[in-house]
Amino acid sequence: MKLKVENKRLTFMSLFLATALIAATAHTAPLRAQDDVLDDAEDALANGDALDMDQIEIEGKLSPSELLKRRREKLEERNKLMVEKKIEDIRVKQEIALTNKLQGAFNNSLNNLNEDKVQTTQAAPAPVAPAPVAPAPVIETRIVEVPAPVVKEEKKSKVIPSLGISNIKGDRIDLQSNVSFGVNAETMLTSQISAGLGLNYATMDLSDVANEYVNTGYNNDYNTGYYGTYGSGRAMKFTKLTIEATGKFFFTEDSKFKPYAGAGLSFNRTGLKYDNNTAYNTGYVNFGNEELSSSAFAGSAKLGAEFDISDTIGLNLDLSYTKNITSGISKSAGTVSTNPDQGRLENISKEIEDGDVTAVQAGLVIRF
Figure 1 (cartoon, rainbow, N blue to C red):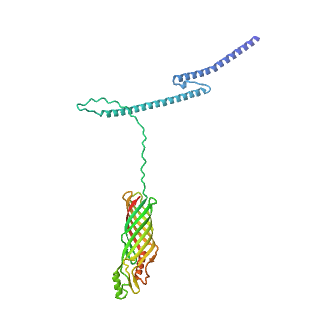
Figure 2: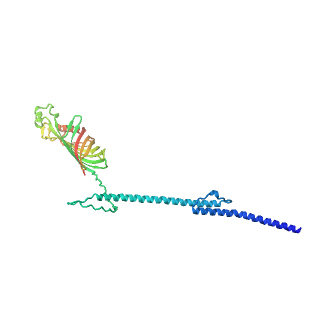
């Protein structure tokens, strides 16, 4: 009985060892198979062969697939670099071809120009030697100094000598002057505004035919004496000296024709006297040596235009309206009660001061 028990123990031990050996063998086989698959994949990648993923059987963890993924990504990156290098090689070849083409066309043009030059002699045409190939042109870079543009100097000052006539119109007078003379000096404050100072001198010849003492009922000796001394109309002369400050606004700038509007303030010194100052006395009435002067300020409005002939010479036309704003008559002869013609001068001078003065002047513009 004891022998049977030992045989059973030996049999059980043998079976246990055989089972453990089979299990170890079964566990080692998949690992070796997995290593063999990875080795086959590496060999295929190294030889550039495509991998058939259906033939790869991996059991257990996914680390082998991750390894394959990394290798695939490296292959993709290398392939990208190879494509970029290929494109760059194509571009370099194209640039070389284009450069050679342009160089050849340029050389052909130079050869054609050289072939057109034919040298002749008196006897017979000499053989034309083949034109040498012209060397490639040398391109030189030069710095060219461009002169600065000439800035046109603007002439801001000007002198305007002028001639003109004026008319004085009042309630009982309508007088026209002789030719007047004037000169204005102006400067441009801006491109359209000027300021100036002018001087003008005007004269006027009058004839007093309304002396009240001619027909006052005195005896014939008085009337005859007056007529005999002064005539039926006693001639007189009016003078006017004007100093005027003016301002003008020009409506255009860069134009030969420059219309303007302006205003002025003037000081006027006037004088009125009879031409014939021969003394004539009858009773208490005295004639001769009558004279009257006046000083007054006046304001004026102007319209006109300038026309440029050149940079320094131009023409000017000026229309003005003037009105006295003050009055100051001074006498230099006897009183009116004893000298009736002195009263005539005062009356006429008063009419002139209260009258409206219009004037037209034409002048030459000289700029500097």
